[in-house]
Image 1 (cartoon, one colour):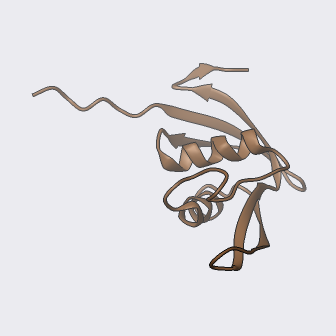
Image 2 (cartoon, helix red, strand yellow; image 1 turned 90 degrees about the vertical axis):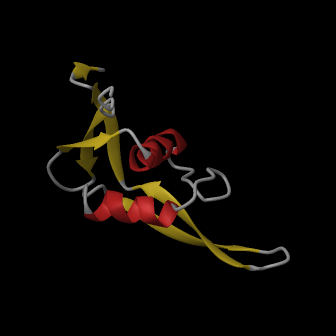
Image 3 (cartoon, one colour; image 1 turned 120 degrees about the vertical axis):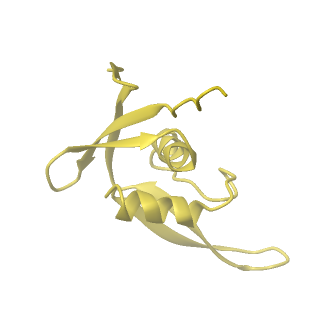
Length: 106
């Protein structure tokens, strides 16, 4: 039997608006994908409509509470057949990818 391939590890430098920069390392997967999408979206942010993913609220919760990444949530109204509100998630810090599997990126 062939051993399972380990997931790629991504290390990010998080620079909060107030506080000391710190690094977080995430394995390849949905949480890492969500952080990558938030970085690409910059000040526009992400919603489940603009960046389809099965559980944005779950990814954001884990990024906030396990990895301590500052993420802002804005509630936005929408119309349509089922009017209501949806969340838009935005990074409330600077984030930079610094390392992939131990190899320096920057």
